[in-house]
Amino acid sequence: MPTIYETVSSTLLWAVLASLIVAVPGLTIAYLLARREFLGKKVLSTFTTLPLVLPPTAVGYLLLRLFADDGWLGRERLGFDLDIILSWKAVVIACSIMSFPIFVRTARVAFEEVNPRLERMGRTLGMGRQKVFLSITLPLASRGLIAATLLGFTRALGEFGATIILAGNIPGRTQTLASALFSAQQSGNETLANQLLGVALLVGFIAVYTTERLASKCSLRKEQTG
Amino acid sequence: MFSKKGADGMKAVKTIFNISLKARFGSLNLDLGYKGSKRVLGVFGVSGAGKTTFLECLAGLRKVMSGQITVAGEIWLDTETSCFVPTEKRHMGYVPQDHLLFPHKNVRGNLEAGKARAVQGGQDFQSVLKKVVAVLELEPLLDRSIDQLSGGERQRVSLGRALCSGPKLLLLDEPLASLDLPLRRKILPFLIRIKEAFELPMVVVSHNPTELQVLCDEVLILENGRNVMTGSPNELFTSDSLFNVAKEHGFENVFSGTIIEKSDQVDRLSLSGKDGDMSIQIPATDAFVGDRVLASIGSDNVLIGLEQPRGLSARNCLSATISRVENAGTRWLVHAVVVDAVPEFVVEVTCDAIEALQLESGARIYLVFKASSVSTLSG
Image (cartoon, each protein chain N blue to C red):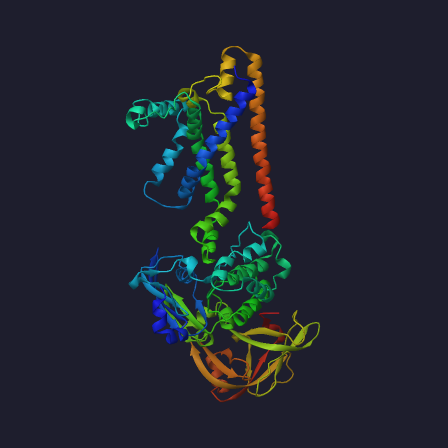
């Protein structure tokens, strides 16, 4: 049996990995949805939101079909085995997919809140599109983007339904804080369940509190330095 | 991109603006052409006439169907050769009505936002910054954040930010419209200073004739996206068709003079010319003796006398010579020369008065007005 420490640290690691995986495509899609008009924008928006409205187990099952031997990303089609199912990689993938919509939606709002005329001012001052994005859009959206990262991270941290279908609940291998709590409760191990609950509360509190601090520091800096 | 510059380089230096644009934006049909060698171009029109759209086309922020834009010899747009220089490469400073300063940067950060282009254009950024800070009196504001600035200060920083980016053209979109009257009076002198200190071509958009009179060498009148008239501001705003539009704000006689005397309630302003000294009383200003200030008086606030009046409460009486009398719709305008240093005064009178006083060009008259009718536009 892994210790609580081991379960928690691997859960945190997987949630961080999932957040990192989500960041770049998430930011890109959020920016495109907020700032550009293109064919199929609504379809893209709907697809990125789907995991939020589907039962997590349905998403897990969909991923299972995808990575199964005869799936689109399965051994038969690719010619080699990605070795996803029932591995830590499955946990990270399930967490990424489940936290993607909430990250994109929050980041999109953060970008939409930046006055596009400020970006155009940047261009009249000689900044190319990339520089406008880096020195105007990104800093002005920073608070919302921090919130998006936090929400995505906590979503990944607590992911259960999709993870348990794609990665299972193998202690020491794919068991997360959420699935460990589930197992403890099911097997009547109340002490362990209570301990896991305490840890979950603590981790959640620290994550939200840290972000609140960061966000207020960020806005404080804005107020002080403009 | 600038290959055409060499061949007709001499000609290009003389012609500052060569613009022709055709575009459709919603219900606005922009279709105008202008070619001119005056450095400061004003654009006047009622709201919805397409003034801001025109500026945005100049800035490259809107795409036009067909047209050409050449400013000071540089081609920015030529749809015939598919030349379109993007906004960031147009080397112009754009000052919008609502300042649009970057809220996440302080004043210095805002001024430095266009540094890269200024440096790229071969300018010594530090000396440009120094000059801008001096001209716009920004030194005490440099380390402040944007939300610690007043409306007038924000507008000054916005002007400074545009000037620091190494522009070859300055676009001002209603630079005073968002400010209240006392603030306009404080900012207008800065605009005049910018005009004098930085020898940049400028395009100033406004719906206030007085501002354009003060700042511009030539004015273009926009109506439904077309330029219906072009000419010097004084000529245009007293013209038959425009007088009534300009009248919304009142036609203002704008003149500058030097403060020579101060008291609690009134200042004495000297309007000296080669052909004589003349001074008038104006309401007390914040300016000091020796300062130059801009003052204005509405064309309907001046009385005409054939003889020097006596026993009047009005404190100002200037002798003048009528240069012309013209009809502007239902009113008549008398143009009179006071001293050569001051533009002609325009006085609005009725048809009856023209007949009764036999006002005609060449006649000697006296212009009478109260000190309190004079407004100061600066100081």
